[in-house]
Image 1 (cartoon, rainbow, N blue to C red):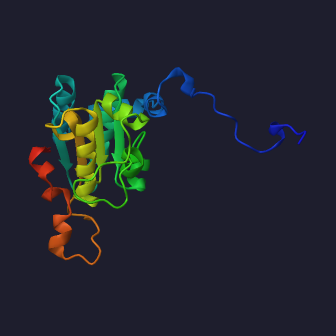
Image 2: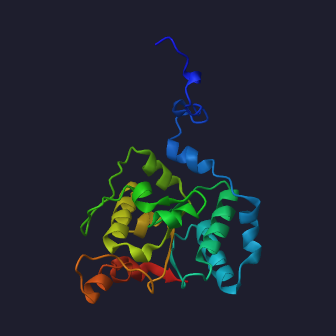
Image 3: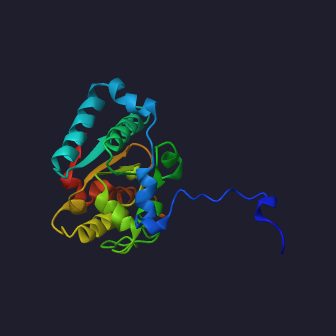
Length: 224
């Protein structure tokens, strides 16, 4: 129309990401998350129980033991504090960490946090034996294959079928069908004393049965 785009109040074009370099956007974004000095220093302020969990999880990553962990504790006991220390430490080693939570509010307080439905493409309606909706050629697959650690907070609020769908998809993309989550180190967190999964018109037994505690995966998880 003969006008210049600069005369309109539009945001500047961000040229920092260029997909011609062959790096998927998901990897690019995760690789550019910088930990603050405060987060890097958190590991020095861990209490004894946080330190035990911190050391055990880092040991699993370093030795490729491919363990699953569940960080348990009532609200306010420092679970997010522990995650931030872990994320800063692993990212400082130039490794990829996928930080997710079930709810958007919790995701906003975790550096680089995303909701699990957004990150893992979990279908909104899902049955037992389901899969996430990303393909083997997608950037999400490349990200999950590259990741050294996956963190999923507030897992106590989501139905077990969603966690099992990620398990099924991870076994598939990692080509390791016999190992939970394809052999990745995964840290779950949450508090079963708080909000459990929503089962419409469900009884107490049905609600408990929908939780991760009733999943086949629970037997593989180390309780911290």
